[in-house]
Image 1 (cartoon, one colour):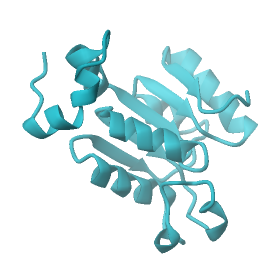
Image 2 (spheres, one colour):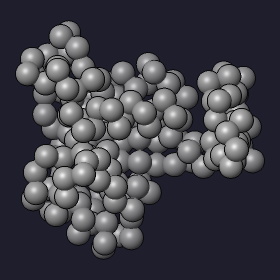
Image 3 (cartoon, one colour):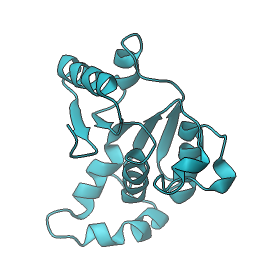
Length: 156
């Protein structure tokens, strides 16, 4: 059993009292390693909730920058973030939300040349992309590596 710090015990106190979840469930979250591919309209809320819930290690893969037209749907970003890289900016915000987690910014597009290396350190891949080629690639990589692939939308 992992010992939770006093701050973590307060932060996750609502999880600890959930029937069927408790400290054991929070421990599984803390040990979890999730890669989110895409930090835009789909990835932003996913990332925010993973960090708030206490997933221990979160990777953010996105090579794009924040634009003004993103702000009405990409909740991690503000006007001050325009022109900044999404992965790095999101990573900083998640660390501010929950300093007890490990967050890695991967400022790169996932492609056939780097996909296996990038997903290697994670248990779960979250597809928060908006294009079919990347979606199909992530599916192939999940099958090859035995990783769990979760789609962040009903659009499959």
